[in-house]
Image (spheres, helix red, strand yellow):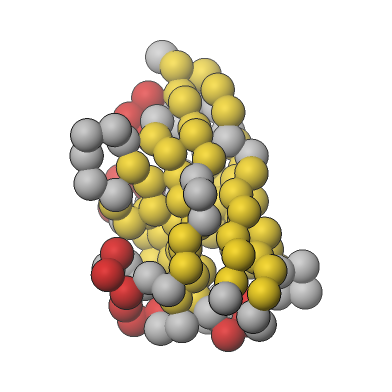
Amino acid sequence: QVQLVESGGGLVQAGNSLRLSCAASGRTFSNYAMGWFRQVPGKEREFVTAISWNAGRISYTDSVKGRFTISRDNAKNTVYLQMNSLKPEDTAVYYCAADRNYGTIATIEGIDYWGKGTLVTVSS
Protein backbone atom coordinates (compact mmCIF):
# COMPACT_ATOMS: atom_id res chain seq x y z
CA GLN A 1 0.00 0.00 0.00
CA VAL A 2 1.02 3.57 -0.68
CA GLN A 3 -0.64 6.44 1.13
CA LEU A 4 -0.64 9.80 -0.62
CA VAL A 5 -1.44 13.09 1.10
CA GLU A 6 -1.71 16.31 -0.86
CA SER A 7 -1.22 19.80 0.54
CA GLY A 8 -0.77 23.35 -0.66
CA GLY A 9 -4.12 24.07 -2.21
CA GLY A 10 -6.01 27.28 -1.57
CA LEU A 11 -7.48 30.44 -3.02
CA VAL A 12 -5.29 32.54 -5.30
CA GLN A 13 -5.83 35.35 -7.76
CA ALA A 14 -5.34 34.78 -11.46
CA GLY A 15 -1.75 35.26 -12.51
CA ASN A 16 -0.32 34.14 -9.20
CA SER A 17 1.34 30.89 -8.18
CA LEU A 18 0.83 27.91 -5.91
CA ARG A 19 2.93 24.89 -5.10
CA LEU A 20 1.25 21.61 -4.32
CA SER A 21 2.99 18.83 -2.46
CA CYS A 22 2.18 15.14 -2.24
CA ALA A 23 3.79 13.17 0.55
CA ALA A 24 3.94 9.41 0.12
CA SER A 25 4.30 6.71 2.72
CA GLY A 26 4.24 2.95 2.62
CA ARG A 27 5.99 1.09 -0.14
CA THR A 28 9.12 2.38 -1.82
CA PHE A 29 8.27 5.73 -3.34
CA SER A 30 10.99 5.51 -5.95
CA ASN A 31 9.34 2.42 -7.44
CA TYR A 32 6.48 4.55 -8.72
CA ALA A 33 5.83 7.04 -11.43
CA MET A 34 3.87 9.93 -9.97
CA GLY A 35 1.27 12.18 -11.45
CA TRP A 36 -1.24 14.93 -10.85
CA PHE A 37 -4.81 14.91 -12.04
CA ARG A 38 -7.59 17.42 -11.51
CA GLN A 39 -11.34 17.33 -11.43
CA VAL A 40 -14.08 19.93 -11.60
CA PRO A 41 -17.49 18.99 -10.18
CA GLY A 42 -19.62 17.43 -12.89
CA LYS A 43 -16.66 16.68 -15.12
CA GLU A 44 -14.33 13.75 -15.52
CA ARG A 45 -10.99 13.63 -13.75
CA GLU A 46 -8.30 14.73 -16.18
CA PHE A 47 -4.58 14.13 -16.46
CA VAL A 48 -2.35 17.13 -15.73
CA THR A 49 1.23 15.90 -15.53
CA ALA A 50 3.42 12.91 -14.70
CA ILE A 51 7.01 12.15 -13.80
CA SER A 52 8.88 8.86 -13.98
CA TRP A 53 10.61 7.30 -10.98
CA ASN A 54 13.94 9.01 -11.69
CA ALA A 55 12.51 12.17 -13.31
CA GLY A 56 13.92 11.04 -16.63
CA ARG A 57 10.54 11.32 -18.31
CA ILE A 58 7.98 14.07 -17.76
CA SER A 59 4.77 14.88 -19.57
CA TYR A 60 2.14 17.62 -19.37
CA THR A 61 -1.28 18.16 -20.75
CA ASP A 62 -1.23 20.95 -23.35
CA SER A 63 -3.22 23.43 -21.27
CA VAL A 64 -0.55 23.63 -18.54
CA LYS A 65 2.65 23.43 -20.61
CA GLY A 66 4.95 26.32 -19.82
CA ARG A 67 3.04 27.18 -16.63
CA PHE A 68 3.18 24.07 -14.45
CA THR A 69 6.27 22.13 -13.38
CA ILE A 70 6.31 18.71 -11.76
CA SER A 71 9.26 17.52 -9.69
CA ARG A 72 10.04 14.87 -7.12
CA ASP A 73 12.39 14.30 -4.23
CA ASN A 74 12.79 10.58 -3.66
CA ALA A 75 14.75 11.18 -0.47
CA LYS A 76 11.71 12.99 0.96
CA ASN A 77 9.10 10.73 -0.67
CA THR A 78 7.44 13.81 -2.08
CA VAL A 79 6.27 15.01 -5.46
CA TYR A 80 5.59 18.66 -6.19
CA LEU A 81 3.51 20.65 -8.62
CA GLN A 82 4.59 24.24 -9.13
CA MET A 83 1.75 26.14 -10.75
CA ASN A 84 2.50 29.57 -12.18
CA SER A 85 0.38 32.06 -14.13
CA LEU A 86 -2.74 30.45 -12.77
CA LYS A 87 -6.01 30.93 -14.62
CA PRO A 88 -9.61 30.63 -13.40
CA GLU A 89 -9.97 27.52 -15.55
CA ASP A 90 -7.29 25.84 -13.42
CA THR A 91 -9.79 25.78 -10.55
CA ALA A 92 -10.29 22.15 -9.53
CA VAL A 93 -9.55 19.53 -6.94
CA TYR A 94 -6.02 18.31 -7.62
CA TYR A 95 -5.21 14.67 -6.97
CA CYS A 96 -1.85 13.01 -6.59
CA ALA A 97 -1.48 9.57 -8.15
CA ALA A 98 1.04 6.73 -8.14
CA ASP A 99 1.53 4.12 -10.82
CA ARG A 100 4.25 1.50 -11.22
CA ASN A 101 4.19 2.08 -14.96
CA TYR A 102 4.94 5.54 -16.33
CA GLY A 103 3.56 4.43 -19.67
CA THR A 104 0.04 4.07 -18.30
CA ILE A 105 -0.09 6.79 -15.66
CA ALA A 106 -1.96 9.21 -17.92
CA THR A 107 -4.88 6.81 -18.04
CA ILE A 108 -7.04 6.84 -14.94
CA GLU A 109 -7.55 3.10 -15.21
CA GLY A 110 -3.82 2.53 -14.74
CA ILE A 111 -3.46 4.31 -11.42
CA ASP A 112 -2.47 2.16 -8.46
CA TYR A 113 -2.99 4.71 -5.68
CA TRP A 114 -4.78 8.04 -5.27
CA GLY A 115 -4.58 10.82 -2.73
CA LYS A 116 -7.74 12.45 -1.43
CA GLY A 117 -7.18 15.71 -3.24
CA THR A 118 -6.59 19.37 -2.47
CA LEU A 119 -8.76 22.21 -3.72
CA VAL A 120 -7.27 24.96 -5.86
CA THR A 121 -9.45 27.97 -6.52
CA VAL A 122 -8.29 30.70 -8.89
CA SER A 123 -10.27 33.92 -8.80
CA SER A 124 -10.45 36.31 -11.73
